Length: 234
Image: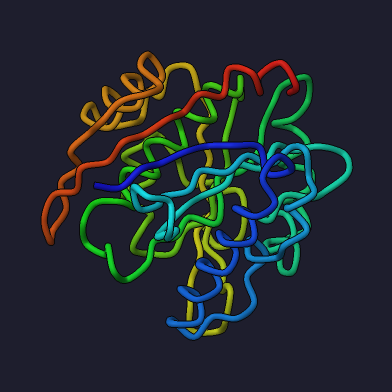
């Protein structure tokens, strides 16, 4: 069994450091060393929320993700990444933030020890549920080619106004990233029914145990999305 817990970054520096180390190791395995979502200044950003996947005894972090809320202090990782080739990203994010709450789901990773066991898919669903709990109206994500379909299943739509129909060369010349956004957080009209039902079940029941199916077997995961106290800060 694994467990997922959530927290605001500035409230648990030790877990942030362990998250960053695990994320860096996974990126290194794929030959990637420069990704904006892997920078560590988010440790001290009060508008960053973290989900980590760990062993039941808490001795090892094997995956995780973050949500960065857009503010006027720190640019979103997607802004820093895309601005290298497309400055319009700043205006686009600002338009979504105009009188509303937007941000980014980023830094999603899992270790090779649990690859193929459905954890990335589960984290995507939980990330959208977290964003809903935080009162967000929209949510950006920057995907590798093999995660685009998964994110679309969760309600993300390709932001075709940027790059080459939403696609960019990033984080290195032989890799492509795609920018996507959920525009209707409260409805998820473009999500497939299975993902949509499960996301809303996490919203309605933020603590529980789920058996997630993967290509290499099932994984029992205890999850806790108790962000109610944090909503008041946003």
